[in-house]
Image (tube, rainbow over all chains, first blue to last red; front, side):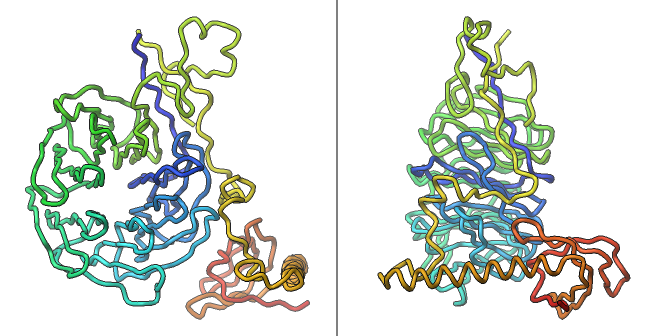
Length: 329
Length: 128
């Protein structure tokens, strides 16, 4: 019997949620960080959405946030012209890296030793976190604000997307652009899947998949509305996307067919990401909330409980909360 | 008619008065490196560790007593950007992130009630 998806709403932010990222799977589970225009990025337990802490310190909207694999460090990019590195266990601010303009994107290398930043000054910067006072390596080339910058190919290369409607692949050592992709529209988001070397890009109503090494196209899918963000499932069987019409769409990656769409957010969806185990995906919206969605609807996982119809009316169902329609935390 | 999936409870939201990162959580206890230098790295002996702990406790106690002594007194704050303000100190929040003050004298006038961010302060002083 098919069940209806119950999204879990994580409240707490007071302004639009513009970016989110998951950590890897750690002995304590996996974690989720959300970037918000209220300047207060939050750390949550990844499988339940439970709030763990808020990183306090930025003096402007936070545009980008990331966690390292082990979820021991966090980095944030903000409108106060700084990127900050945090201890993700204690919540303490560890480093402030001053920039010359709004910082939009931050990304750790696999070993968490280097931080890549990109922003409105059109530059990509690489900071050695063991020598933070040293001048960062700067990579120039983009002709307008950098939206997203990611490490790829074992941290030997860098992928960047900017408002100049290009995505560029750079060699980390030489700082030279290896390849450039041009688009008709501004790229709204970029996700890099190391396992399989796939790049997921969104622009206009399109979700496009490319080979990360070569930037050769794999396939494109068009959605019913303008898409702001998409994420590919770790097993590469589905991908999810969200955008201007407030809905989350789920597509079959192989057949490109739309499988499901979910309503829930009260504003455009700005970011969506699959969890590292693929069991759920999180979306951040203009409405100031994060929502967690099940990949396999009805499965027991995290706070979701698989309940057989007979159990719902029995005395044992006291601990269960069966939502009639929309639930808000 | 599809039945909606049941949930055990809703995700926990932020606590209103804390920035979180519970020091009693298993992850914190396991991963948080000790803040006492004497006990990390070389085995300098329990004497050094004890001494350092004693001094730290003393300093902490002194700071907390300073906050108590400051209550309802006029305090002079040196902030960044060479800003100097005076106000009557009310209280601090639990994480020493904000100070509640009254009659804050600013170049723009007197603010009856205000919150000063501790991260904005360089130093503060008052008459005992």
